[in-house]
Length: 326
Ligand SMILES: [Zn+2]
Image (cartoon, rainbow, N blue to C red; front, side):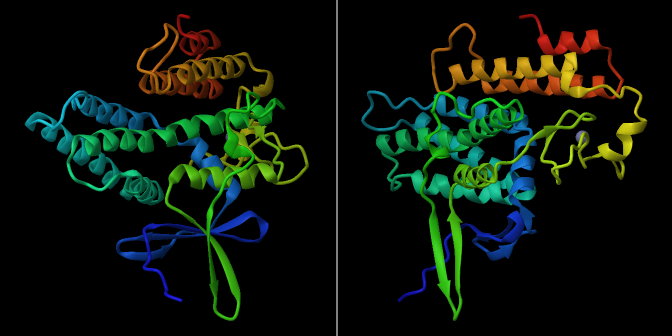
């Protein structure tokens, strides 16, 4: 049997105790990434701020909208010009991501490569490329919002995916590689970022995790023991965690029943639904919002909640920012 030429992508090996080993394959070879746990990786992903990223994606969408393919036999000079700009902006974004988040960059590029037709610069090629690239860039934002919604549902003991819209939570196929060198090793192979996180989410959910909200910073975490834990281990100030600082903090209030935190949750879910309604549609219903609007609100509201929890903002002022004017 022939050994296959290595393709860019990510290998994931499941290990004991919820650990994963990850090997990233790029054009310059294979590199082992720091070992992590499924839980840490999925929680870290849920906290990523996609605001700046979604702004760039919206900008790429604007460039794509300048390329008019309908009713044409051949692209015009202007179409080629915008198409070049569309591709180069996409690759500039991926290049920047390579610095901060190599997994995101490598898997997004791989999935774009996999969904592109053979390049012949025809109208059909440009049309397919336009939609495929935008779709690949956007799906990760959708999945990030979905994970946040899922955490909220676990925390509030709601049903996950009540409408049964997310088929991937019950069945999905992944590629697996087996190597034999006296001993058999199986590792999963990914060339799509969303699939990698779907995989992690399924592993995470199958462990039936308890999700708690930190009564100090208001963020989700999975308690290490079954003993009731109120505070998380995130660093709040320097090397001091919520657990270290919470007992001495002035506010000492119950985040769980706090008015501002509750208002934040309610508003975030409302905004998420509005965003979902608008997603992928050209026609925007009166209550629909775009990615950018969602993130502008999300940044301001999260900051208001955090400031309030640190005692730097009054309840009234925080609620004003979170609830906005509708
Ligand atoms: Zn905390």
